[in-house]
Image (cartoon, rainbow over all chains, first blue to last red; front, side, top):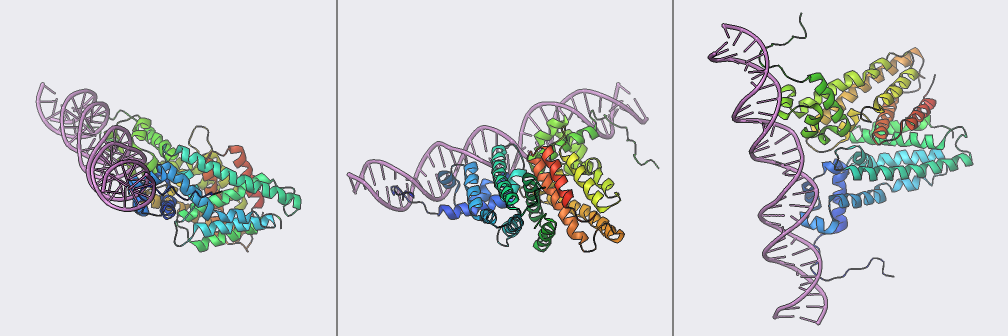
Length: 203
Length: 203
DNA sequence: CGATTTATATACCAATCGGTACTGAAACAA
DNA sequence: TTGTTTCAGTACCGATTGGTATATAAATCG
């Protein structure tokens, strides 16, 4: 089965690497949000012209969705890893520290693409906003299920609600995204994570 | 001393109430952010024409600053009250519950004007963004000082850093703003506040 | 060699952005 | 009344938005 159907090689081959161009687009969306990123911003960063962008990626919204896929696949990989940690506390710690690494990289935009895309702005981005929010809900559900498992395994007190604790953790993570995006230095956010973990319930 | 210099009554009087118009503008900015709010959105909500807006408020950025002043004066009044509470725990509780009331009103936009204005978007809003962030820093400093007082008074353990705890609380509040703006129902956020308070250090 | 297919590049589209000239209308002082 | 001053409304400005028509260049197929 030839999954990666390796090309009907007819016609002129494209002169740019779509993956590299998509990665460049991701950085623009990540830094400026969906509406804040103009086609001029995007094409300049991607090093291609407007018609090339439309031929390769459809339109702006489709490009954003593909960039969002890439973001979740590469920059949010720590979430999948964190959920495998042995205790709820370690899950929380890996989520917090992983988020911090992702949001405070020196060579990439500060903050979280999901947060900046769900907070901003006008009516044009409504459907984009809704999809980003839906994806966040899906991530949160995974955390809830992990915490329910933790309660069964006893490393989370039976008195706490898995859903409420997951909401609490998500709120912290989104707050961290706002802080990172606003330029709060990483050292301060590291202490913030320490503080949060010192308050975390149970062992 | 006639502070509110009651009008050089020459010329045609304006036909609209500037305070009501400013309140209408505030709701638009609050719901859509600075860049998301177009002049058409604003003038329609305010019930005035474009030249009237410019004559009365200067320009879009100046209008936003005046709306931000109004927002902090009326919708963020709970912050000043919360800082007067007798213990650090009660300060935190009043800040969290006050923020929730402000961000989840049925007749006003969900979320926080400061957060939506600092997260969004393009380059046009850069100076606006910086001012909003600066105002948030100033609020946080007040919380830090209140917590230092709490440490001196003994209702906060000497082992915790007032600055770190204030950063933690700000992060929670900003995360709440993201959640509220994303449409998370109030009941869930109420439980979130309960969870946060159950984890709050000391008595 | 054509013929076909696909990508690139220029140059453009209507719509919207924030902001303003300009024409009248409505109030005052003289 | 006659100026003078200020506000309201229409109609417009250049710039930018997301998106395309068109013409040409580069590849394979026959």
